[in-house]
Length: 239
Image 1 (tube, one colour):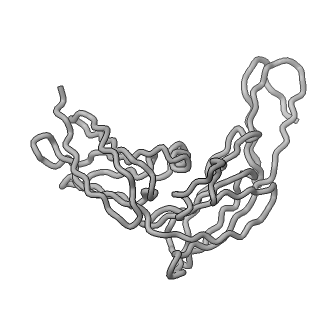
Image 2 (cartoon, helix red, strand yellow):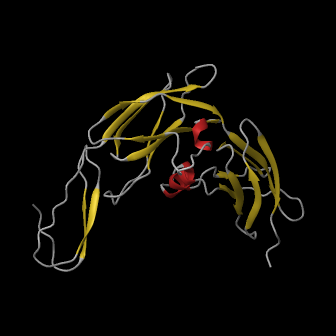
Image 3 (tube, one colour):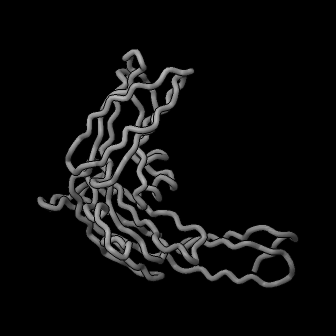
């Protein structure tokens, strides 16, 4: 039991081993009951599709797809160890998408969809459930190139973000994974930039920002598995 100050506001509850929950408080003397649900635990291993070799240092995500009843449902994430094993100890007990992404690899099912709008990597997790789930990965898409001024000089320290409307990637961007932007990178002294976490089949556009230069947005392309798209972007002159 807790005492809430008079007036309207919100109540947030967080406890180890339970999914966080919040609700609006309308004031008054009525009793508000918040029922927490135990989080699920997901463990497993990430291996390459053909060779079955383990993949170390790759991100594994559990992204909630149905957040009804959970006002705060953030993706759970973990890095694999040297043997490709991972553990997600506190996953929201709901329908989630389980996948791996990073280091030039991606779960192939991220590129697939179904007629009913669901994903083939969707998994329903029950409160308190412990799940063993091994994930396969194949080559991701990548992009590399240079950012130049209108006169062809390299731009150092430019922020380059590869944006996409892919539903799962959008959730990761909202949760500030990959430095706040999926495929985000910063140019080096020669204006070079590269990323290897693009989802094959997904459409991307490029956004570039650099101090002292006009911003750039555009250069649409589709990512292809195992293929690096070369790009050269010239920033427009500041008006």
